[in-house]
Image (cartoon, rainbow, N blue to C red; front, side):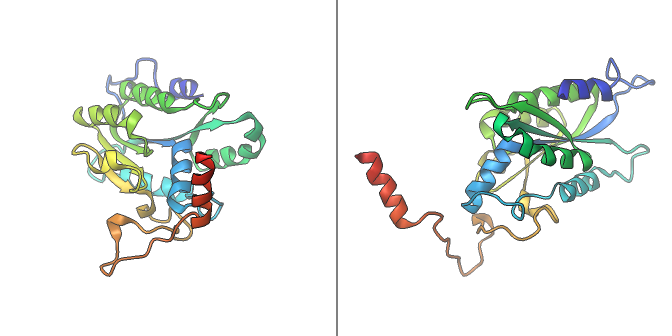
Length: 229
């Protein structure tokens, strides 16, 4: 879907009638990574109440693209990349349609093997946009430094503003980078209907905080004993 979408929204050579590539702010969302890291952060399977609100994120992204001094505002595009296990295709249909109604394009790929992933599809789409447009700002929702750190830093060196949005607990690659900007996803206004059940080590109260266990002590001990036997 991404390749078709890219062709449908860009001219054949990537330039407008005046021979200038249009400015673009692009958002890409790594759905498997954000979903997995959210579960790790809250220590439970995400529910509707604890999942991010895509309408609020769209509003934050579009607001950040506004350039009062520019004669023409940059184009904006947001894409969600998702793996779809065949057994979950029906249940995910409503989620995909909701994303599309919020203005997001969706690249959906069947997850047929455990290691099937969409990271390369995300990088391919970013590459398409760097050729079809002047990529002014790239916002990447992913905590996956293994696959994204190097290409994102290369883009930042080339002059693109690159912002990584993820959870601070799992996005060390972006937090420590001198080239990338980092935003904790919970700091996006309205991203969550209620505060997540987490205590961030980068925002501890001055008197300290207790971090509750995410698994019972007996369950953890039992799992260890089972592995040894």
